[in-house]
Amino acid sequence: MSIGLRRVLAVTAVVSLGLGAASCGSAKQSSGGGSSGGASASGGAAVGAVRIGLLLPETKTTRYEQFDRPLLEKKIKELAPQAQIDYYNANQDATLQQTQVDTALTKGDKVLILDAVDSKAIQSSVQKAHDAGVKVLAYDRLAQGPVDAYVSFDNHKVGELQGQALVAAVGDKAGAGEIFMINGSPTDPNAADFKAGAHSAIDGKLKVGKEFDTPQWDPNTANQEAAAAITAIGAANVVGAYSANDGMAAGVATALKAAGLSVPLTGQDAQLDGIQRIVAGTQTMTVYKPLKPETDAAGQIAVGLASGKPLDSTLVPTTVTNGSGNTVPANLLTPIVVTKDKVKDTVVADDFYTVAQICTPDYADACKAAGLQ
Image 1 (cartoon, helix red, strand yellow):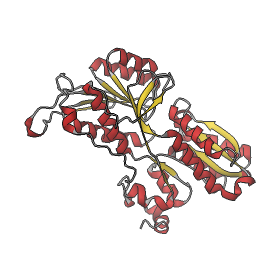
Image 2 (tube, rainbow, N blue to C red):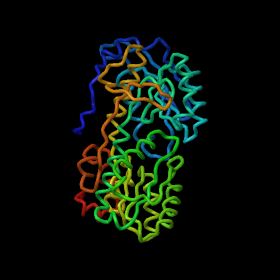
Image 3 (cartoon, one colour):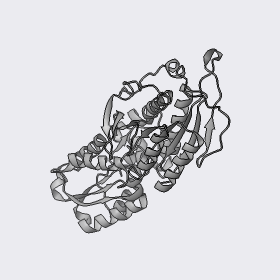
Image 4 (cartoon, one colour):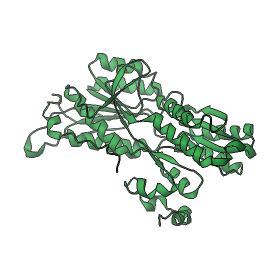
């Protein structure tokens, strides 16, 4: 990968800081299960134990269970082999996530890696953690409240890349009709950034006929919104469709097909079905956010926060301001556009997916045409 996001954090520097004195007995499983480790550092020296809560937002988007969780847990254990990780998934329920934070604090977690369902609703929980001396790392979504650090991609840039790709794909048909926009959940601060970034590239170049903010990023709702937009604009007048992520793009693609339309369609997250649609030509692009650099940075920051020492500036080289006005040290990674001609050089080259996973029998001919087989 050429984006240069894998920074080195010396393990010995982290583990020598005394990451806590709590015993490392087996923990009861949380709503999503838990894991613990009792390995020693090389040379037989014991590594200080640290207890970390990992709170992810939902399971509808495949990335969280398939990639984020295992990669985060692996990185934490590399840096702190005796770390105990309490895992929670809120299943898109903001109230449940608040309860899960309470549970994590009761269990004695000293650092929370928090991917908020609702960035505003979770503010009181972030404050509660702060008041208890527990560090909060906002992961992928910037929560409100006194957050200690933030790791994500440059979300405005994500939307900008999507908008630029849509403008280019529509091309000289821009004046012949309108596009519609299916944005992400109004409770997700990332969705607002994607939307703003997309508009920065689209406004003045494409006419937006209909636009929706989609609760919970739900693909079924996106399908209904897309169908409504096609009806409102008129199928013959639709020249393109913006979808903020691949999950919703599935619903949009179904609506376009039902209307007999083949127009440019955006996406994000490089989901397997999104990549397959790109290969087949029913989706124009996706934004690939290589998760290992994000999870590596988050793991390093979480273990660093547990040490109680100031974070290395190379891990949080910039700052952002969250919705509650707090200035938060941040690490913003660079997203990558994937089109049909870039699949092999991105998600396949990074072992994100194998050719066999992409090129199932239904996509065999399309894969051959795309040079994947």
